[in-house]
Amino acid sequence: MTTAAATHELTREEIQRFENEGYLGPYTAFSPEEMEAMRPEIDRILQEPHRTCLKFNGKPVEGHQGRHLDRRLVWELCSHPAIVERMAGIKGPDLVLWRSNFFVKQPGDKAIPWHQDRAYWPIKPEINITAWMAIDDVTVENSCVQIIPGSHKLPLEHVPTDKEINTFDKGANVQGVDLSKRVHMVLKPGQFFLFDETTLHHSEPNRSNKRRCGLAVRVTVPKVKVNHAELYHGHKCVLLRGEDRYGLNEMAQPPLE
Ligand SMILES: O=C(O)CCC(=O)C(=O)O
Image (cartoon, rainbow, N blue to C red; front, side, top):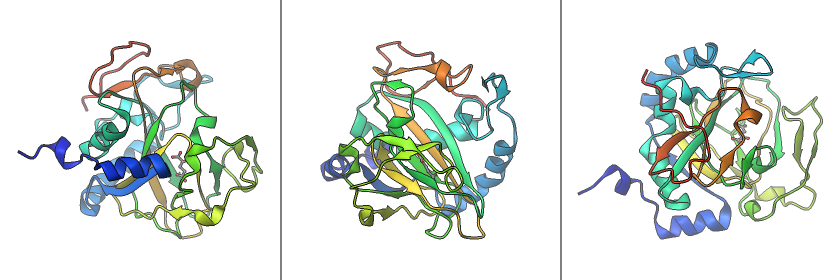
C-alpha cells in the first residue's frame, strides 16, 4: 500500500547528497494552481497582526513571522507531508517546528547577504533543517535564493554588512569561498527546497517588477533547546512529527482555524 510517508520518502542517494551538499530539491508540495488558490488568503494573513500574544520589545511581531501558530493555512503549508516526511529521512522521526517566516521581496528590495543561519539563532545545539517554499513564481530575475553546495561543512565568521545594500546587519565573511559554485533555486509556486543550518545562501536585490514571496519552515529535533525569550514573547514550538521525549521547550497545539 502506498502511504503519504512512503510517497515522500527520500532515497539513500538523496540522503547522501544532502550530507555532501547541504541542500536538496526542488520538490513539489502544491501545484501552481493550488498555490494560486491559496495566495489571496496568504496575502490577507501577511497584512494582519498576529492573533496570539506575540510581541517583541513591546511591539506586535511583524505579520510575516510565526504565522503557523495563529493561522491554520500557514500550519498546513508548513506541515505538508512532502516537507515533513523528507525532513524525517534526514533528521529522524521526531521533529519540532520552532519557527516560520515569510520572506517577501517587493520589486526593488535589497539583497540578503551571504550567510549561514546558525550565526543568528537562539537554539542549542544548532540543529535545523529549513524548507523554503515558493508562494510566488520564483525566478533569477525576482531574486531566488542562491546556495553554495558543500558550504555547510565550514561555519564562517559573520561580520557587519553595508546596510545601504543589504537587509541583514551581519553576513558571512566569504573571502576564500568560491561563489561561482552558486546554485539558483528557481521554483514554481508550491515547490520547495531543503537546506542545512550551515549552508551558505543569499539572495540578490529584486531587479524585476514582480513580488517574490517564500515561506521558510524551520524544523529541529526535541533534544534542542530553543531560547523562546530571545525570539518573542509568547513564542512556542509545535510538534510536527513523532514524539517529544525531552520536554525542553514550551509547546503549542496547531491552530484550528
Ligand atoms: O528569502 C531569501 O531571500 C533568504 C532566505 C533566507 O535567508 C533563509 O530562509 O534563511
